Image 1: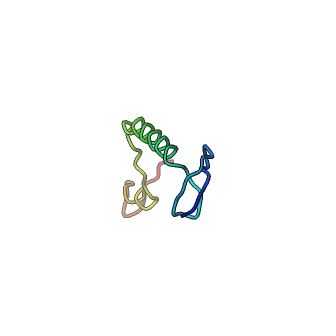
Image 2 (image 1 turned 90 degrees about the horizontal axis):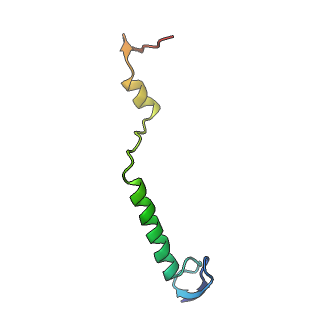
Image 3 (image 1 turned 180 degrees about the vertical axis):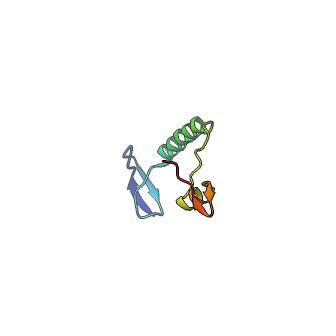
Length: 70
């Protein structure tokens, strides 16, 4: 067991991990804040991410080549 100081509130806590992190109360606050932020962004539509190859495949083609309008 290792004794650490919380990286946020500096209270002492014991853990099996050799590196210091958040204590249990700070972890719960962090998780609650993350859930609140996730709930705010859940209603927004996601933007479709496409690679260059997917964009090329979806582009209109004439005789196998992309049609570019100047």
